[in-house]
Image (cartoon, rainbow, N blue to C red; front, side, top):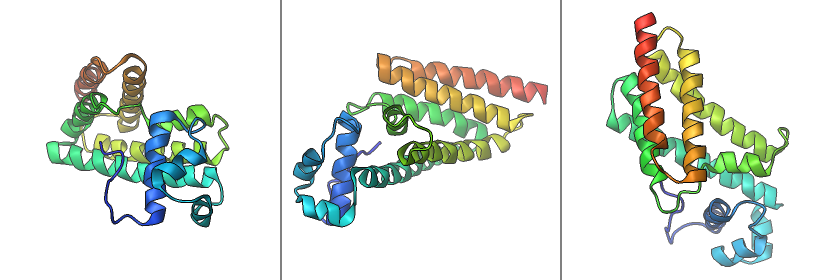
Amino acid sequence: MPIITSDPALTTQDRLVESALQLFYERGFHATGIDMILTKANVSKPTLYKYFDSKDALILAVLRRRDESVRTWFISEIERRAIAPAKRILALFDLLAEWFQAPDFQGCMFINATAEYAQHDHPVHRASAEHKRAFGQYILMLAQGTSVANPEELTAQVLLLMEGAIATAHVTGPGLAAQHARKTVEVLLSQSTLSS
């Protein structure tokens, strides 16, 4: 999954967002100081504050960019690899397995953000929760296209397995977390179909 673009035609604002995205993903939000972002983006502090009135505002812009790129990448890849909704759900876990092997894999930026901004009413936490909700809507749409008896329950199970695989891969290394989660989803799909 692409983390940062190296397009020399980026606007100054986009360069700030892309530079901050890479640093926040690699180092964390609190550990990344404004000066590090300025150096990476090659801009001055007044230029930064021309576009963003605070570090939190920059973080929110980064999360919006990451949300867009993550959902676009996952959905386009899922739909390229499979046609049937059940197969598309399984393709999600194939993509996770590939992502976990990437040398720059540092877990889920949105899970990481909620760990650093734990208060549920904080804008960073809310933006991260919204990403998860939006991705869940896509999984629900796929689940509704299968023959399972309870698409909402299947969606909740798939999301739980997805998040668990991401957290496991981040903490212990890629291993077979995605593959084990995929096998569990195969069982859930077959059992749900049999009981419908």
